[in-house]
Image: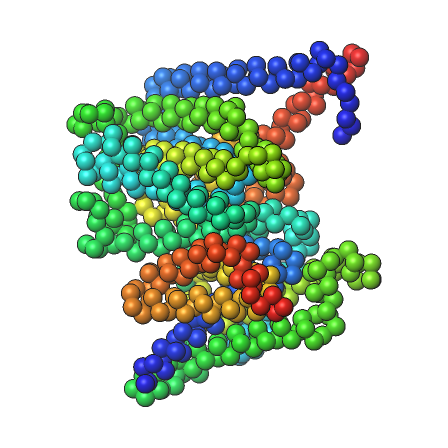
Length: 288
Length: 350
């Protein structure tokens, strides 16, 4: 019983991890059809900001929830102004430019911090379930992932700004006619996506270790999750993360972590073959 | 651009000149390759020679994506898979059979068969643009994961251990077909490589001049229209994809001859580099990928060894600059400039 309990926590936390990795990218791709290949580096910058702030004596939670998102939002703002703005509507060009950006950021961070792995320890200790114990921080991640999904959905559904953002997503020209400048909306969306990526980076920093190349391990997985999600980005990302996370943990449990990863990737390929436009193009189309 | 009706004489000139140009380019390229193959080993040091051989193998790789993406419009992020498969199957087959002739055959056949399977899966599923990129990228990641995790006694093909992170260290150099003990010198391997590059170039040229190749370009421009005209776009795309995989496999075989095969051949950084070469050189040209490959390699090694900037910054910077300011790539941009310079005096004469 205890064992099953731990296993379920493992499955859910691996789903939460995927959600955290993908949600920033999901917002950018879903809202503006921008594939940000530097997404992993946004996460990396968030993680570095958090580690540096904590080492400078700042409170962990303050660093995670305030400093890191703000820092990455600033980076996102500059990137949008300098690069993305000129490439709207050209998916592959945007992807290549941000791929260049990704390499550029890795190089810069390597020069500044050196090619070493640093990290901070997870706060909050652990809780015990029967004979086993699990890090409490895992539970924080699960709650945060769920909260982010719900917050994004509520923001888009219930607020005025969310309505405008969805309108710009559906038809930018009409939205412009109604007096809302699409460029501003896109810029804001990109900055919000970047801020959330920064938050994710800070949240996962205690678990993964922080190095200049850490983003590379995430970007492909985030990218695959978002593409498989389909048109209903927020809900789809959650759903696809649930499928992939379960497959990954289940196969890791019976075989090895390598095969767990491979099973995740294989299920992505099969999913795209069966549903070429993503999961939510077929089911739950009304969701967000 | 204004549309004007050309007089008959000019019309025929516009169709004849490209053909003459094409034939002359092909002849010039082959001649240059033969001259280089004969002359270069006499003037270069061994270290340079091996390095240049590696460059040439990468040029073949660039050419393969130039065909698949530049002409075929198939945004394939899996070219590194075929490159790596070519290298691995060359090493494994050569070591198992003791003769590299089988290795060369395997390095072409294995990637092509795998590409045929993947291509059938993708093109018959009617998967388009970005989604092709995602699937092929995913396949790259799978191979990278699997081969990095293939250390230990459980992962052996025939008598060759896959060796995990370290790859297969004792990759044999090419030998004369049928005589396993007569291995080629680095000079001879260089000559083989440069002839292979010329051959790969000719394969692409011939394919593009054929009816199939022209249909492929039509599909890139407008797939629906090509389909409505009665072409089975899936078959044409599949053939292009398989040819590209064969070229990439050959590149992997040449690469394995100069270095060893490691899981690095399947890495995301190789994937990125191939795309960057083609983008910088110019999509829709065959010269472009070669120029892009050499340009990037020279710049990253020159500036990278100076120690001031690391290769990532340079590569990233170049990529951003090109996407934003020279989106068509080096070769088409230069061609445009020279054509403008040549045409101007003609117009004045009128």
